[in-house]
Length: 168
Image 1 (cartoon, rainbow, N blue to C red):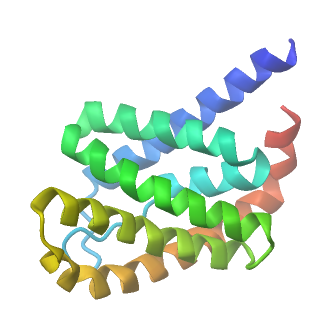
Image 2 (image 1 turned 60 degrees about the vertical axis):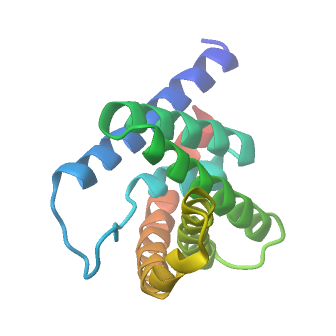
């Protein structure tokens, strides 16, 4: 099996895993203290992709997951908001990873926080008001907690299977 075939297979597996994680979060009604707050299990795949495969694979995997999930479970607005959050989140996580500013937990926390900021920037653009930012402190706290949980879990997974993914 050549390298390109292996790469396609790994990307496909990671996209499928992120899609399933997103679906699980959608069907399990877990209330985390405020409307719109989720753990972000699919982001586990994103941060692992970023650490093991690099920026562009993480971008393509995240983009494919957002489009698949949006068309399957949401709609154009969910795709738009997810893309805004993911773009800002991935950019910040990549910068922090590239320059070794934080460990995986810190990178993931910033990813969670900036994902929420990206979504709020899109919401402010869509509704033409910055009034939506009044709810931001709640989601920043939630993004910090969720990012810490995903970062801790990502660190554990990376220790266990990071080399397996990289060598596929």
